[in-house]
Length: 364
Image (cartoon, rainbow, N blue to C red):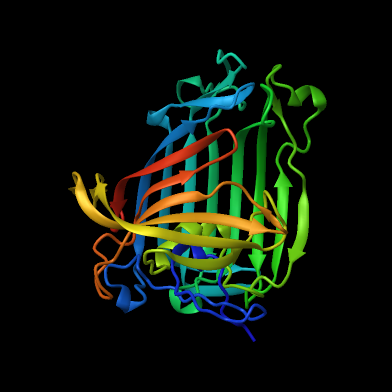
C-alpha cells in the first residue's frame, strides 16, 4: 500500500510531520499556486512564468570561472497546464504537465592564476551559425507529468533533453559539449522508476568529436536501470517538477520540510531534498502579472534554501529561492510564485529573476 512520503514536497509545499527514525515522513501539499488554494484543484489551470537569466562568477583561478550572458537570447520559461496523458497503454486525466525550458547564450572565460581572462567558447545569439551545431545556444528542456495535490503531486513520467557546454573540471580550460535525453517512467504507486539515458553523440567518430583545442563533443554515459523504494522515507517528487512542488509547502520562520527525489545526472538512487525556510521577508516585486506591471510591489516571501543529500554525501551547494506567500488559506494573490532563484555550481552560479507571470493562454 502506498504511504505518503516526503521528497519534492520538501521543495514546494508541505507540513512537516515528526515520526520515528524508521517510519516514513509524509508531506501534504497545499495548492498555493491557485488564486484560492482551498479549492484544491482547477481543471482549467494554466500558467506561464518567464525569468531573465544571469550568472554569479566566482574567484576560482586557473579554471573556467567567468561567464558573460547574452540576456536578449537567454531565458527560463516554466509553463504548467492541466491535461490528459497516455503512456505505456495507460491514460491519465486531470494531471499537470510542466515544461521547463532553459535557453542560455553566453561566453565562457578561463581565468589564470593572475586573474587574466581568455575567451574559451561563445554560443547562442549572434554566435550561433546556421551550418554548425557546436555554437547553438545551450538548452535544457524538461517535460514532466504529475498528479494533483490531493495525490501528493506524484510523478508519472519525465523527459529531459540536454544540450550543454560543461567545463571539464575545477581546473583547466576545456569544455565538454553534451547532447542527451533522460527519461523516467514511474509505476502506478510511484514506488519504482525505470530510468533511461540516450546519448545523442553516440555515433560520432573521434575526429568528429573534436571541435577545437578547447571544445569537444563528449559522450554521456548510457543508462538503463530501475530505482526502487522511492517513497521509503519521504514523499517523492521528480527533480523536474521541484520548482512547482516547492510552491506547495506552507513555510514559516525556521521551518524545514523533507522530500525524496532523484537526479539522473548525479545519482541513481533516491536523494533527500530538504527545503529550509530561514525567515519570511518583504521582497520587492518587479514583474508583469497577468497584464499588470508591478513596480517595487511589496510581497511577503519565504526565504528558502534547498539542498540535496544522499549516499552519505552532500550533492552540491544549496539552491536559494524567494517564494511569494499566500495571505490566507483562501487567498494566494501572488500564486506562490518563485520571484528569484539561485542555482550555484562549483565555478559559477545561475540567477533567475521573474519578469512575467501569465495565467491565461495566449490567443492562437
